[in-house]
Image 1 (cartoon, helix red, strand yellow):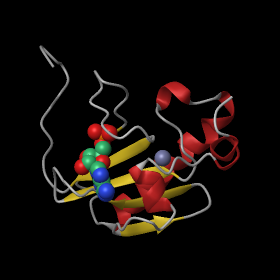
Image 2: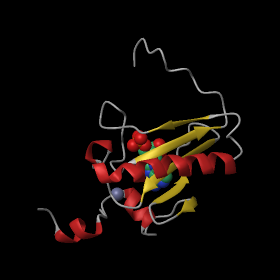
Image 3: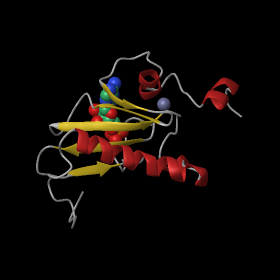
Image 4: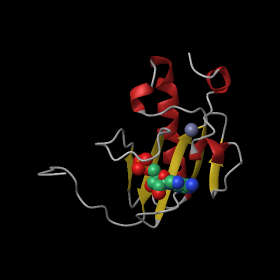
Length: 129
Ligand code: AMP
Ligand code: ZN
């Protein structure tokens, strides 16, 4: 068992996304509800680059439990809503969840990237990463 405070709150105050959710670090928040918070990525790779983050600290997809299934679905539905709000629904967008070192995950608090506003590079088929 770890720190009981962390275990009960499911918040990790060493985590930058937990700090943003707790209002202890600034971010351009675009959406918030009981389950998720969405804010602009500080290093956007496209004109519209938003992160949809669970309010509860979950390290990555690897730590998801069966009961988190609806939470993951909710993240996608919020992404759909934000894409429409940002005016990129028709032109299209990419939803990405990086997982672990080989997945390019740098912040270990699960998040969905919503990326649009320009033509994405085709990544499938992938001859080499
Ligand atoms: P990933 O590499 O999938 O873990 O994505 C982490 C993303 O978080 C990167 O695109 C970063 O630019 C972004 N990021 C890191 N710190 C912040 C922050 N304080 N506010 C907003 N976005 C951030
Ligand atoms: Zn966190």
